[in-house]
Image (tube, rainbow, N blue to C red; front, side, top):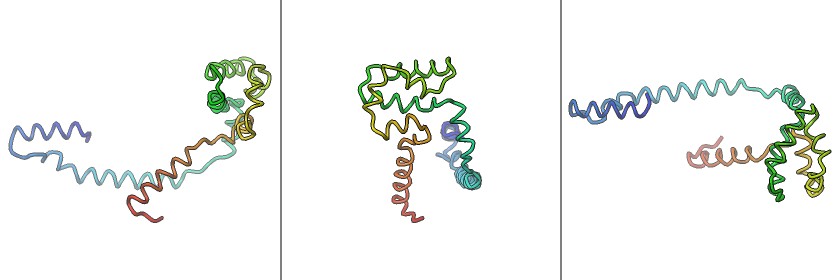
Length: 156
């Protein structure tokens, strides 16, 4: 039951008789049962998930390298490009209109060449091999896991 509804139930209960918070207190057991049930179902579902690498590769190919647009925009911005977002947007639209890969359109754009030359090998690898782009989400996830393991003293 949504929190606002339980608060409203408490309000009605308070005005009718002296049973402070008794309406929502009656649902505490249900909330715990729902949480346990949801956790069990989530654990079962998560154990069935598998990475389909062939499908990932197929999806990369289908989108013609456009996944590189995001890291390119971030890299260009960090390098001081005055309108990185707009430039990358125009390049993606051009790749789609001309039915060319994003990397091909990028390689033929004279304005971007100076930036490409100044990029590190790692940055270029992300642009030309989109599968290399992972960002830092995995590092953030591990930090969250470690925080809660320590907080609850969980050793797994």
